[in-house]
Each structure stands twice: as structure tokens, then as C-alpha cells.
Image (cartoon, rainbow, N blue to C red; front, side, top):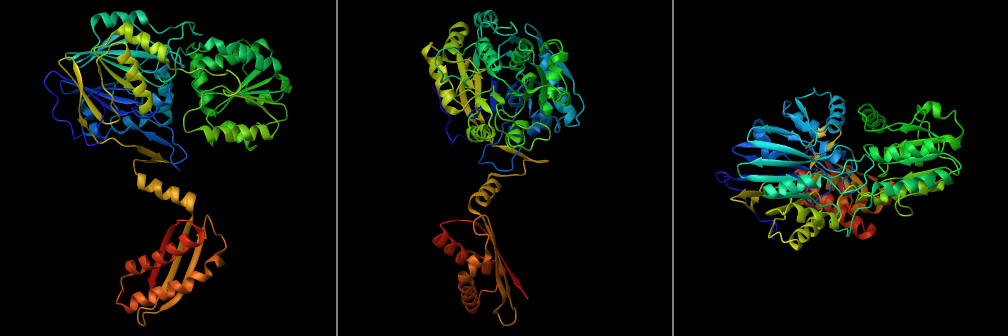
Length: 561
């Protein structure tokens, strides 16, 4: 089994007749999935998603894949294939299209409809798009594509088989093998077996649940739990889930209809996505069940249901504002029931528990994955992955979609079924398929691309470190005026702090030592303002560290007058 090496050098030229696979995001994290395939001088992209920031990335809105390695070759891109409509697979597409707006887009009906509304939001023109469904085949340059139905937590997900002169690649996208799905659309294992008979040279498989033994439970298992929540609720029911989870919304709508309640959507993305899903026939709304939010308030509480965004504790989401009691029309009341019908994405635990505690404080009953079976994963567990490996019998395996521990667990499953060549790569690690053998060929630069407001890629890890220091350790500014003639301190030091010592008198005892240190430095011939600022920083930094055990950001300003 091959492992990535931090000292890998840049890859050499692609050998004649070989296929190059470059993950640009999604390997080593759960999100921002994007992979570039190169054959015969042309490129095919699969997925272009975002990653949502964690607590240690303050001020960041989104994190994009890093396509800088192919930026000067965007003209060689034949198409962008989107496996399904989740944000971590389509969310970065508008940012890519800003750089080349005519890349053909390929995906299922629902996937491209969800992306279309996103492009309009970004004020981008609709580019050429190809709506495909399972069983369809089409070619882009040297890439011959075939699409296979897979089951996931959003309808219309597809795996894609990519045939080139170097061999066949099968990319699962995100998938599971629910045998009794709500929409009746199962993962097409017969197609997987047929492709396996033809010969899959490289199998890219979803690793997200590879550490979980057994099989992912069926979505239908949740239906009786939701029904019980409705049956036991005497007041209003608020359900929080992903704005793209059509299956879960369908279950809630059906339960509301059965219990003679009416439903309103809360949150712009929920309203938009469910409108699209309904228009295309993926969501069946029972008669007289859905109402506008302003009309819901006229009903008694025991007949109200709200379906909201914010299941991950996002600070600006509808549910977070409800929990803080600052939502403009939804006010949590004693005995309301809140159902968090989603998984906990790693890194979001604190934010979610903060929302749960906020809701409970106002007397709400909170039902979540920790105390009821209200969510099942959208990803194949270990048992399902073993089935796939035995059915497909690939020559080479490249685990994708997951943190490093998930990919290593997936690799062990592949090896257990007899796959001899399993390649573990991370973002930027280049894998070449040459003469039927996949091997690491080098590494390209591939970091995080941060979106901060309208700024894309301008924020660096160093900037984030500064923000973390500001947030955790505080900020001190020191202003000193030095007489350029006498070389003496003429005014100050004036010291202001934020974040740990709001009372400026705290710093009275360090003012004289700063003056003394400046006098000594000037007497020794230091006249450069920058060096004098460094003197101030050292003196106050040492004092704050010893006195307060803090390491704040210090901004000294020395003015010569």
C-alpha cells in the first residue's frame, strides 16, 4: 500500500498513454471535493465543492478547492461532472466559472437545477450544461463517460465511469446501498458488476463511513421515530435539517399530514431548494400541508410545523437565531419540540450543543441523534464497501472523500477483499495510471483557498493565526511620541487594550519601564522608528506574559515629532 510523503517533488511529464489523477480537495477532509483527470493533454473535472469553516478559522465564510495547479490550463478542461447536488460537491462551481465561464457542466436534473439557482445568486450566466441520468453515455474529448445510479441522502446522485485509452476509472461519488430507499432508486450494483466484468482499472470510493462496521441503516427506519415525535408533541414542532435533504423533508411533510398539521419552511436556502425539488417532482407535498410562514402564525401551536435550516449550529442560520430568541418572527415557547434531523459534522459539535442548550433554556424539548434515531448517514459503511469491492474487483483502488483515518480504513477493506494495489493520496498528491498500474507520481501545491466576504484567496494561514491571537489573547496598542531633537519621550506611552484588560490603568506600572527602555535605546544610537517599536514590543510583551500569562497581539507606534 502506497502512502503519501511530505517530501514528494513535483510530478514529471505524464507518460505516453497514461492517465493522471490529481485530487484538488476532499482527500484528508470531509468537504470541498474536486478531482482533475488528465489524458492526452486534456482535462476532465469531477465535482467542485466547498468546505465549511471550523472555530479555528474565524471570519471565514467558505473554503474552496485549490485549482492553482491547473489554473493556466483551464482552457484544456473538457467538462465538469457533478455527481450530486450537495454543497461539498457543487458549492465552489461559481468561483471556478468566474475564471472560465464556458466550462460545460454535466449532472443529473436535480443537481443542475440546484446549481442553476446558485449561479443566478452569483449573477453568473447559465453555461452549457448536459442533463444526464443513469445509463446515459456521452463523450468529452478523449473521455467517454457512463453514469450509474447511486443512492445517497439527496435524490439523483450518480457514479461515473470514465473510459480512456489508459483504462477505465469508476468514481462512486458519495453513495450508500439503502435497499429500501424512500424514492425507490437503489445503487445499481448490476451496473457495478457489469463494469467490473469489463475491467475497472482504478476505483475511487467514498471513504466517509469506512470506519463504521456493518451496514448504514435504511432511511425508512426514521419514519416511525418522526411519527412518534409528532404524536407526543402537544405544541409546535420545529425540524432542523440540511436544506438539500429532500428525503428527510418528505418524511416530515408526510408525518405532518398524518397528524393534521401544516408546514412552513424557514431559511432562504430551504425555501429555494424545496421549491426546486417540488417543481421537478422529487418532493411530493400532501394536499393543503404547505403554507407560507406568515399564515402559519394564525394556526394553533399544536397544528404548526416549521422546517428550518441550521442543524449544524451555524451562527447566522434560522435555528441559531431562534435559540437566541432574536429571529424576526419565530419565538421559541415552553413545550415546543425541536427535532435536529441530521448528523453532526466533525468540528461542529460545540456549535450544535450551544444551540441545543439555548433551545432547552426556553423550555423546548430537543430531540437529536444523541437521544433518538432521527438521522442515518448518506454514506456506505464497511459492510457495503466490502460488497462493492467484491462486485467490482478493481485492479487499483484510490480511497476518496474523507479524513485520512477514513481513507486508511477504506484501504484496509479493499486489501481484505484481495485488491493488491491501494494508493493513499491526499490533496495535491498526483496519481498516474500507466499500463494498468496506479502509482504516486509527485505532488503539486494544494492548500486551502479561503473566502472572506467578497475576498477569495487573499486570506492566508498567517492572517488566520493573527485573528486567533486577537480572539483568544487580546490586543494592545502603544503610542509613544519621541522628540527628534532631544531624543527624549515627549508624550506617552498611551496604552489601550481589548480582549483581556479593558481598564487602561492596568498598564500604569509598565509605562515608566517603556520610557526607560526607549531612553537607553536612543542613548545607544538607535534612531530608526521600527527598531524603537520593537523595543516597546519586547518590554510590554515580556511584562504581559509574566503578569497576565497572555500573549496578545501588540501594535507599537513610535512617532517622531
